[in-house]
Image (cartoon, rainbow, N blue to C red; front, top):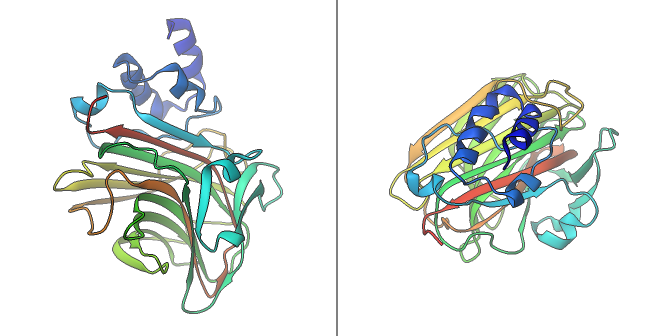
Length: 286
């Protein structure tokens, strides 16, 4: 990329992410197709919390980016749980943003919505995966959550999920394993108090390094936008961070599918998602 073009691109990125993107570009991992996958209003991949190995930074990552405009959802995703209640459109708050909307209710036993990329995007195990999206909760009633799905194993039908929950005064950020019935097995949860409101956008990000190794390192973060009603606006520093290290849970696939999840307990889920981004660095060089 020519220096002038690089400066123009980075000028549209909030300050907290510029150094990270400069390093990737300087290492030749940032190619024109990758640049095209980002909105100039602000890339949705957040800065790495762990230092990826040279094996990661010396290769071009596999990237995906979806706003869910036009037929992006129909052409690229397959519903796994409650597929009929997952549909593209514009955000439920009436902001006119292209979004993927999750609707429908759940009883006291809870219910899970799950959708994933139809084609497995990765050909080998990953040494680093970074994902993010923007999520909006339309109405408040009991517990509802939206999150990111990683390492989904089509054989065991299990995946790793990071979910942001809107639950009044007991909002949560949860890392868990989801199974084929939508049951969540908790790995780690942090309390957010009453930090999550309605009809504003939040940036949810997930980073996992070394998923193909013995110990994984996970960072999940939540940040607000400088313009709360504009998901393309820059983000503020994260107000919540969840860290975890340990073995990759049994039944997950280090080269598995990625996607989106929603969860509700005694609630109508009623939420919107946009700017779904993923960047995966594969273990095996091309």
